[in-house]
Length: 442
Image 1 (cartoon, rainbow, N blue to C red):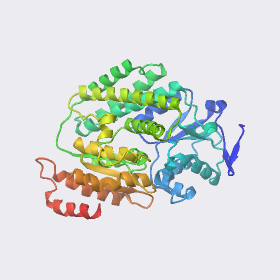
Image 2: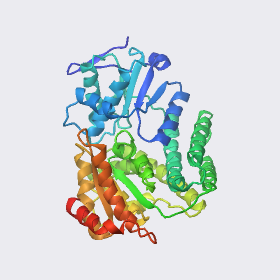
Image 3: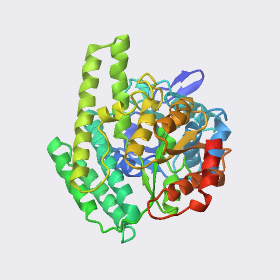
Image 4: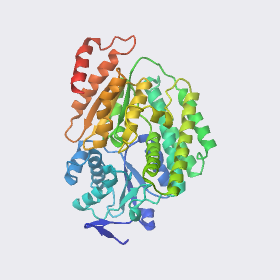
């Protein structure tokens, strides 16, 4: 048994090398395509990692048993999902660990790990180790041992995942053969992680070759480009990406015959590294850390540039803005000092979506996320002033919000979007009422 330390009476159990052999590590779900590859990377490195994909209102109920109801909704769900899994009877509770990310910023995401440990004690599961996945030097005695090879594979997997998600979202709503897009995406995800296991697909040359090939293959899928309402999704990072947190928002929008665009994760990664550089410039800090962060940002931007070139080469597809272009989009709208949580990036993502024709935007607002309400919901009036055609609806996600109410708010926004579709005339009978309702309520 490893040495256990206690902080305020809560046990901190280190994850030892011996545990690596026979422990199952549970991870909460977020990005389906990206996380599938990352889980495979961990498993190929000798770990036994399992992605939790459970959904349903019982998970929030489980979280409410152990987490104060004033805590932000993502924490409630992540902790509820993990404890629900531990209670399911599927796992040996003496050989199961939990892993969550820690951002290291002022957001409460840095404190989820402490809430989780406290909740495990309340649930009678103090023996379950909790691992921190972070690059900030937090939880050193309980951090996942992120080696440079694993880190490199994970970063490249995120970039590949962004490309697959971007192309999928622009092709799947129009595909003639149902399921062909996801079949191609899944095949590539499996191929890429198999290549990672043999050290392939990681150099700039290999990344470029793979990205151009996958973009070209996806572009060959036969489609019927009929007019559809184009919808962008932004918000707090977990609620934006996790179907558990947003009640299957993407699937719902597809049932409403929409094309959905979700900004990729690499923009958020670059935003976080860029913030470290700005902090050192403003407040001082290690020159070595500054050099490392600058190199890391340059590496991210290089991979992002390759991805954008691959999308452009595939034909008439929306290509994301580069990080410098994205940053410039919010000049005069929001200051770069707004960097808590998703910060100015969330506002920039809305601006980018509008520029690309996705002026119908769902802003996912989790309960308890104050930064998100400021840079998301708080910026909607300003964005409508700058972009009068912006059709943005903030949707609250919390334990007390019903799925029916959330979907009805979204349907109001979609009706206005349908009325604006060129040549369709859809929704015109309700347009005046809907516009008035949106103006009053949002």
